[in-house]
Length: 95
Image (cartoon, rainbow, N blue to C red):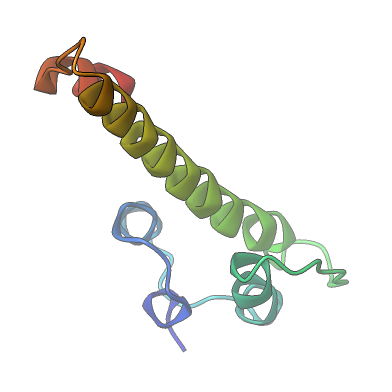
């Protein structure tokens, strides 16, 4: 199995690839899908087996998803009110 098989978003996959990580460790392979599905996970593994990444990778993805949703809601709010126009520059600053 590869990281790309775990439904990880492209920016995180690119960062993993840039650091030379291609295959998840067993703890990552088992934990990441559950965390992305919003389930609680309790895992145990030896030192240096990737437990921190097993938590951090899906957490970063969830935060990214929430940020995109927040920006979309902000955009909709201003478009509905028609009081403000959100410029591409402002969206780039926020995103």
